[in-house]
Length: 256
Image (cartoon, rainbow, N blue to C red; front, top):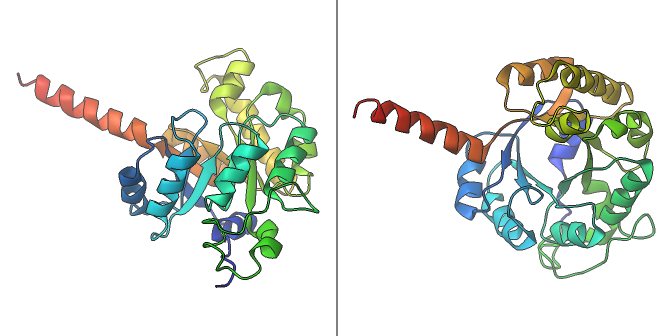
């Protein structure tokens, strides 16, 4: 079997807009069902959701037959966690809370085999299709997509330096944590935060890297896309479920 090319990595490098959905429910049913909905990518979260490498492994299996590309967010910039997620078959990851060049370099090392990095080698994994992908170890470094999250006020000053780190394939802005570190917890729509996000998107693109974001505000989604986000997450599975469940409950309770 030949190495599996990372079409998501290629798309964002070419500036082709990729619309995504955040997946927080650690369910194979949800993963498979959402993979049929037409999103370019699904983000399986293990930072703020209760998923773990085992549940992600099963979600990756469930989503695999469908066109949506699977992206995983580990709970931390931890080489052991990242190694397990990559061995589970994820080709694209978003590493949270990367604030410095050194932390970005550590993330790069975690996703790359030696001599470029420190990812441990294992031959019989889902990533290697259980040893059937020819030359997996030699080709894997080129097909892994590493995105780092810019989500603190301190990181804003280091965007250009982080973007220049070899092996960083994109920078994702986290509005909620950014708002909190700017003194506006719970208010990512604060004018100061919005200005900072828009400026960050422009600077990421000027630095030559794809920019991404997650926001549930449809007007701000459009604004971010206009400014230059290339991989744009537009909603969260749990938020969709709760939003519509509450609306239906309100409609029918009004009739009671």
